[in-house]
Image 1 (cartoon, rainbow, N blue to C red):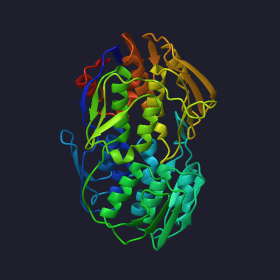
Image 2 (tube, one colour; image 1 turned 180 degrees about the vertical axis):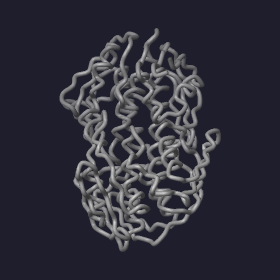
Image 3 (cartoon, one colour; image 1 turned 45 degrees about the vertical axis):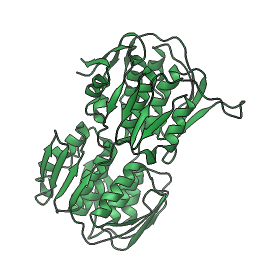
Image 4 (cartoon, rainbow, N blue to C red; image 1 turned 30 degrees about the vertical axis):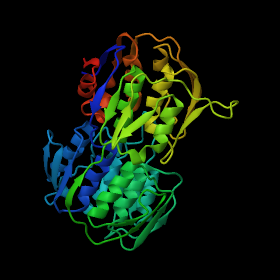
Length: 429
């Protein structure tokens, strides 16, 4: 089952409780390798990437008990046996690079085939990760296979990378927390999931300052302890369901929405005529939003939404805004400052009748409120792009099909079930 069959044109209304943040759960799971003490995680999302990590851990002798119904997972790595590792990390997930630092801490040497060089969004290089690990004392050799080795503990270092990378920042932190001395990372990523990883590590006994800023200072400790931790809600999923309510004219409430992360996201919604309200930590999009693109004061410039590393607008959420803009009256530019492959699915969007001009790999202009029709489209291997194609289909009366949409399951464990609870007519086939 990989195709979504959609009978659109129905307002989606109701209340959604978002799942745990995939981008928090994966690095926190990797960081659990830094200790043999028992760890309990709550609100763990039931997604394929988490399943792959759990299988990887158990294959090496770790004991994992995962209650899918409650989202609770207990982890015990005391039986982890490095001799079982055959050089293969979990396949099909770029976040496998997050295992580099924890495995080096535990095994002192790993040898891997160099097959993880990019993804559908564009080239995601390994160099920033290798540069960080080498700076902190690891030895890197590349003779067909990639070999990383570490003598004793990591050593403290100061590092200023070329750009803010979420996973490279997380690798730095996981290496530095058990290093000798004080390490500093400038130009660090500060996304909510990076903050979540740092908070869990601090609760495990790590010494990290600057969490949520572009400069992290980490003072190494000799060991980390266990504990019980709750994965925070996925802000990507919060935005997705608010956007679905807006594009279909319904009223959607999303609980546990972490409003403190949403100031800029809400302003971006407002640029498309969508107002987001709150009742405590429940985010609300009211029914029948106007969907009119706001004109800037400087009227000779196009309104635009720019996506870049946090605290810019999150690049992974740009497709949801693009889908909304297709329905909004007016013209707006989108600027993806991160991925050169982020707009490769515009040809699929145009099959609905959307008017989109691709200026270059990083910028597009959408001319909204054009007549749309139901159709069959092919989803790229980009989670939120597949969601955006569903969003547009859900707003159009008639049957549409989003083919090969199973990439959505990588981040949304109960996507169709949640949609049906809101009144959607949708099924996997």
